[in-house]
Length: 186
Image 1: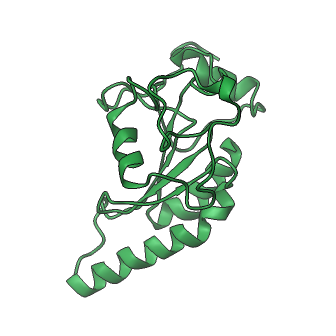
Image 2: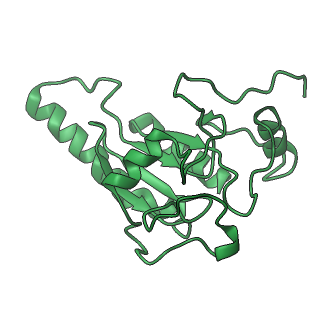
Image 3: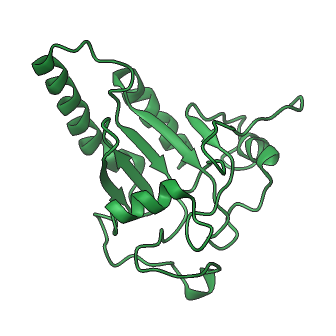
């Protein structure tokens, strides 16, 4: 999935797409590493081969439950269910380690949210949806931004970009731009 996200950025980043990755350990302990270990793991283990994400990675947060990050609370409020599978819940009840449990909770690693350039959540996707499957929606949003800019005589400011939030990978506690760093020599 990480390699596919890099491909998505390579294709649509120059056209304006921004991908933000958020790490969470609430789904079957799928991300047990500390923030400073995450990049090392990506480079050496999964996907390995000295992989380096070409999108913004944030520190770990909770996505669901009492301590769920406000960004994801907002996204889940606006888009209560994945568009590709509204019946998706946590893959196994044993994976649910947060409280309270809500029907709108993110169901697993790699669930995704596409947000329009005006900050409005556009579509939510289950973990089953691959980055390649998002291309049609990303292209549609990019066309809308370009059309709006033409109609309003705008030149396409940097903030006129759709954003893809990937709920598996990386965020921080307070959106203060604290990113995952690998300070040790590798």
